[in-house]
Image (cartoon, rainbow, N blue to C red; front, side, top):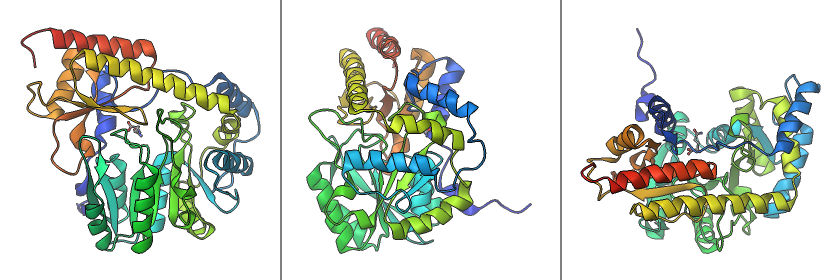
Length: 388
Ligand code: GLN
């Protein structure tokens, strides 16, 4: 039999989604794959029921249903200030995951280099390999995950076609400052590279930090491919609705990639999601207040359990340091915690290019009672002597 494609040996199945299966096997509280255990806003569920009874059950326009794109363009401009023409600057995709694949395939030729900060969300390196590109990793420096601009410039000098920028960052919770983003933009300009952003956590940025939209920086809209999603903002990860936002020149090409990858996102889902895009500012204020509370509750338990961590400035993940706990590595630790303690996280090594084996990523997109139950289990374990 012929061998399967050799490039696939460059990466494994998703460790994040694998840990969800481990959690299910052991009946553990699942703080691994980041998704809520609470309902989306009731208004969205009602809109979905209306959409089910409506007439949007055949293919939508491949690059997005017109009414959805119009509402999306208004929402993007409202928060970022960037002018968005719904007919020229958007491709609606099946989740942020497809958006990233479309962006990378649109920007990169086989053999191109793509800069990926480390730690990174595991899809980026896999997406680069899938489109024949070569990831070039630039380490964010512990403990605050700062950018080493000399190292970044060296990476640009390899002739990189694009840099992937996850802001706020999954997994480390870093929120890039305006100064950092401006410097990244200057390098992208000097070395004529695209900036592919992943901003799915744009509305989960804890005070006093604020989200700076990369495409809104002077001169950056033309070279930015924004990847985004409605999953996190409206707690609808299962709806699989995302988008790429870029210049008309780039979107004309991105549409072709998307058309042949998936044709389009689900038509009734797009119709229903318009309701979310039209939510008032109050929705986003309450949403952030809820996540701030969840963060405070969960970090309180980590502190009480004596587990060191880097405080997240945005998104809903926390990197927890297990180096003093007697495990030989993070993968063993994550499996042991799921089985013996009943709390599942993701081994940190799956997010790093460098050999980093002392971190576990937990997420806190869960009801407060779930977080408290997980926190109690972690505390009880830490109090019980003689166990790793
Ligand atoms: N972004 C989420 C995480 O990092 C969910 C990943 C996924 O399975 N798509 O856990």
